[in-house]
View 1 (cartoon, helix red, strand yellow):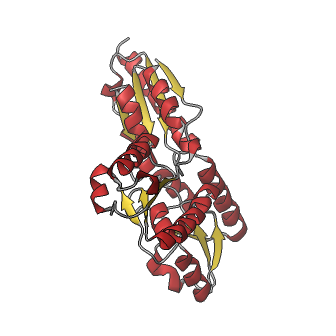
View 2 (tube, rainbow, N blue to C red):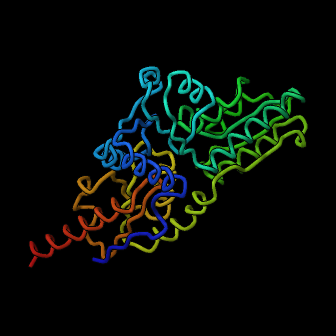
View 3 (cartoon, rainbow, N blue to C red):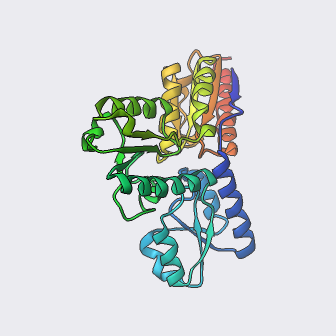
Length: 294
């Protein structure tokens, strides 16, 4: 059985940058506190915890005086940085540059809408760290929509400024933008800025083509990963024999019955080493199957 790892899967630029920054900080200081999971991948988080990384929540901030706090690629609102300063916490900021630019865009969008009595709408997952950071950039409320049904909360008699979480689906963003223009009292008052990261979004077409090349596909991703959920569904739409795992231990031999080829791919939060572990485990399963049937 042929097993192939997708060479374009794995950490995106922002996550590579954050992991590298964390590893250097751990090498220098021994202990670093990450505000939330540094990446939405349980196995990679466990690896970094072995190096001295501790995951904390906002509730822990006031007790971290004199320690080092790591801000992950998803970013944080200004209030988090202010609290850290007040508590005497040293901040290591690994906010993805793409996310940082979007944060600036949110501030500008609110300034524009304040002049015209409009509203800012973001396509994103409610409660996701990036979205929390985006909506917290200003005191004014930001509407968060996840699907077309959520557009009911938008007042289409007023101007709209529409943005997106960086890891959302381009197709969904464009569909909602078109629907907003259709519903608006004045379509010219709907400002649309596509803020989806193309390094992430461009993987959709690539992964669909990749998945079609194999008898079975194993998608390696943490179950907390929003990007992982989107990309796994892209693979499943292209190949019904697509299975998601967090680690090699979750593989099941029956998934590979009759398969002569298996493709392995993953999310922007999936490390290359973990996909290689899964590939090695599949090769071992294949060897055991051949021995049993010889």
